[in-house]
Every structure is written in structure tokens, then in C-alpha cells.
Length: 212
Image (cartoon, rainbow, N blue to C red):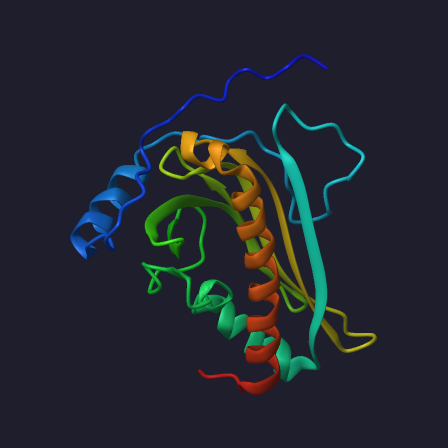
């Protein structure tokens, strides 16, 4: 396979020692909405990516699926939690524009605080699903993100067993020079996000009743 040489040292994303202000984040969100897509298409809402499928240079595939609840009530609770962006609300990460709707073209601003540094990473929702048994979306990173790639967040309710599954799937590689330099740390945080996000959704789907 030919080596993909399109990965450049983008500088749109800056790590800072202080938390970005609300005004600065709003400006970044507005700017990101005007940017073209910055990632190849990998993921689908209808099926998982074949792990044997070759990926362009530097990209890695991550997939985690777990049972987080049981029954229609917990599916409703999980859906409500998704709409509040709870799967990102991990203490060290959160969605800044958490009042935003899950809908195509929506910019999602994820603030991360780790190793004493702050950064806000912006992605754009490409597509979503909202059916009696499935709820979720795929977003792609913009150039204002330390990573390049796509991520899928999906709730999958099985009416035959009553099990509620949460799927988190991503294809990514570092975009920012600092992310490449600290790649082992970057991967550790990606794995931590998957673990913490599943734990948070399991808690919310099991403990929270639907709120309408």
C-alpha cells in the first residue's frame, strides 16, 4: 500500500496552561463550522469497520462495545444521557457546547484537561440515527483537533434480549505535532476515554430515569 503523506503539522490547535475562555471557544466553533471536512470517511452507522481492512498510514482502529443496561426504560435513559453529552462528562473531559443538538453539521467542542494542559478539539457530526432500537451519530474531526479521523457513538437496544449496548468506535491518527511526539500518551488517553465513557454511560443508563 502506498504511504499516505498527507499528514501535516497543523497548528490550529494549541495546548495552553490556562482554560480557554467561553468567548475564545465560541470563536473557534464559529470558525470550525466554515471549514471543509478534514478526514477520510471510514465509519458507518449500519455496520462496524472490518478490523482486517487496511487503513492509511498512521491510522489506528479502536472499538469497544459493552452492555450498559436492560429494558426500554434504560434505553430511554441512555438516549437522554447521550443528548446531554454525558458520555463525554468524565471530569477531565467534557463537551463545552453541551446545549447543542445531536444533528448533522453540528460542531462538537470537546475540552480536555490532562497533564496540566488544556485543549479544545472540534469535530463535526456527519450523520445520526434515531430509531426505536438505535440512537447515535458519527462525527469527523476538523482541522481544529489534535487528531484526524472519525468516531462513532451508538446505543443499540436488542428487543429480543432487552440488552442495551453502547458502542464506541474510532479511526484516528495524530494531526498535531505534539500529539505525534507524545503518541504513547495520546493512545493511553484514548483508551482511558473509552473506559471512562462506558463506565459513565453504564451508570447513567442504570441509575437515571428518563426526563422529558
